[in-house]
Length: 335
Ligand SMILES: Nc1nc2c([nH]c(=O)n2[C@@H]2O[C@H](COP(=O)(O)OP(=O)(O)OP(=O)(O)O)[C@@H](O)[C@H]2O)c(=O)[nH]1
Image (cartoon, rainbow, N blue to C red; front, side, top):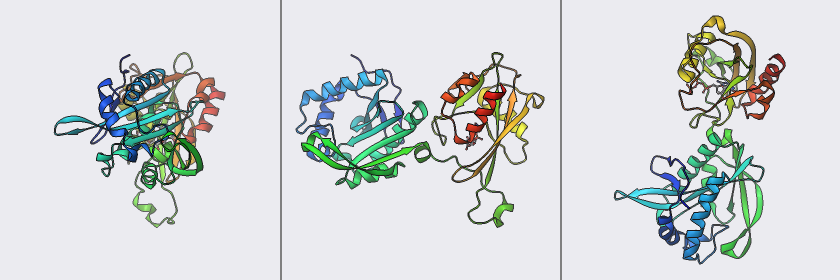
């Protein structure tokens, strides 16, 4: 077997990449340490050397099957790549959630490696997999790991018991979970204009976003997937974006469609259809939705975002921001 094709994920200081057969010795050295093994559910102690080889091969099979992504966390020391730990996500049976796990070699503790690596993998997963939730657990006697989970945005979700191979039986754990809002952030509001300074302290700014349902000759609607790095990454939405100060919604759409999809649209081809008015946690979204059946140029994902032409009846199968739900129902009825 060979390592699967998986483009490494980079952070400021680390690279997350599939494990390699040559990592086995270093992996064994780091994980065959009671202080590390005692925090891990599926790791025996002592850890047999040949288990490292078997486990590495099993991670390749899981990535290839799209079931779990256990990656090496590597850093750089004196210009050389060094294995620091591992981070992984395993899909739940119904594939709607993934379980996060990680460990860091003792010599690398205290540098924020675990939150940096775990946050990166979670953001990747929410943007690229069809999951809505990330779950994790940490031993009750492991406050350091609990702090990591809180730091990446997961929230406490009760208590449970899990079998720990290293401890020889079930142990009490704290459960954590979080969705897109918690991990990739609530969409960030535009700063409120000066006139709203006198508004009540709890008033949310109103954010004006223009969006469009592009409809092709077969009656299919274009959805774009919010790319990694944006709030709510991984959700599917109608192309569009924030209306800038001094811009009309139509001008904003014409600009966004050129920037995001490389097509030219004229204001005359943007037919007002309906709007969304939705209270997010930190702002209120007001989003006119236009219909457009004519444009110049071939639709192209300029920002590398995934695109899908979707039949109206199939729109419900795509996870979309909560504001879009009523729009989808109206589109389905209309088209
Ligand atoms: N384009 C678009 N935005 C939507 C939809 N539904 C929805 O809630 N929104 C929200 O509207 C806001 C649009 O912001 P955006 O981040 O896409 O806008 P933008 O491209 O101008 O942002 P940027 O320049 O900051 O990257 C986000 O908060 C997004 O979650 C939708 O169907 N299409």
